Image (tube, rainbow, N blue to C red; front, top):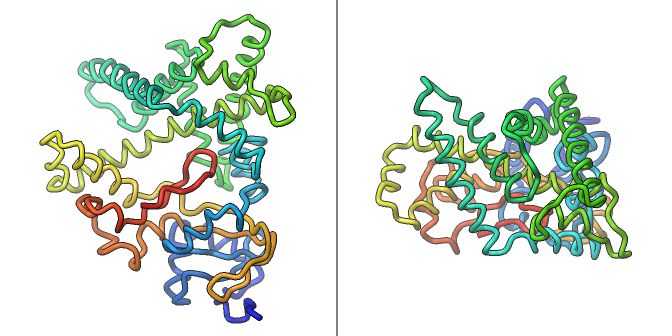
Amino acid sequence: MSNNSNMPKEEGLDNSLKLLKEGYQFIINRRHTMQSNVFETKLLGEKAICLSGSEAAKIFYDNSKFKREGAAPKPVEKTLFGEGGVQGMDGEAHRHRKAMFMSLMSKEDLEEIRRLTKKHWKQAAEAWESQEEITLYEEVKKIITRVACEWTGVPLEEDEVALRADQLSEMFERPADVSLGHFKGWRARAKAEKWIEELIKEVRNEERDVEKSRALYAFAWHRDLEDQLLDEETAAVEILNLLRPMVAVSIYVAFTALAVHQYPEKSKDLESGDENKLQYFIQEVRRYYPFFPFTAAKVKDTFTWKGYTFEEGTLTLLDLYGTNHHPDDWENPNRFEPERFREWENSTLVTVVQGNGSPLIF
């Protein structure tokens, strides 16, 4: 019978401090020393299995084997996702809630987001012309906050743009920070949830008009599997689960600008206006530059994979950064080469997507 006796295992009573110290390199370092894409460690007082590579990514996102509910550490859940949101759900309840999100992601919606982005970017660029310098990341956060609020139907006055942009960005900038930074992230989420809860109340009390096609209206009146309206707190969490990831794209905008600066010979290809070359460049930015180091799940039912037993309830981490730089999956993984995406079928790009559904694996 297969067991974990031959699974590489890191010694020590708890290795959480090492994870905090090493960050993105934590799983990569052990993958190198143990010469394995699977190993066991101890984190937050419990056994954890760490995975890396494209094969591991595919098994990790098999919903018959892993569940997301209860997997994220409480600081991450409270600050990044919010409690009661779609990321912490499984089964039919997850599918039902996720369907609500996906109904807001039609081709027409995506076109509108594109149009709004162009509009607000142009307005901001005109204002930048009269300034000696700008901080791109901070400016882009404000642009996308305007876009996100207009698209979802969330009202936003000009004098509160910077405040809301900061609140939304604090959630993804500091989700697992163990210092004062985590308190700032938690406080930002609490204030943002209160802001959206008030809007939900106004919509339900017919004190605020909002288009029925907007997310604010959709989640204010969304019903669960028991045909009950979401409570105001959960509805607010889900609205923020649209606003926050959109504003988080500002990180990739900054990374893209960095790539243009660091690799001018690669960015020169963009001058032609070729949409395919633009897509290659964007996908390589997403692969090359790190966002989150890993994502978590728990084993749903005990199963065996590659001779290793994954016991029910075991915390499991997938190395996002390491998988996107894995030498078994990528040629010259530490080089910035957009042209690698000409052959999508040979590329394995793994990212976290809305609702913790299937990853993007190309």
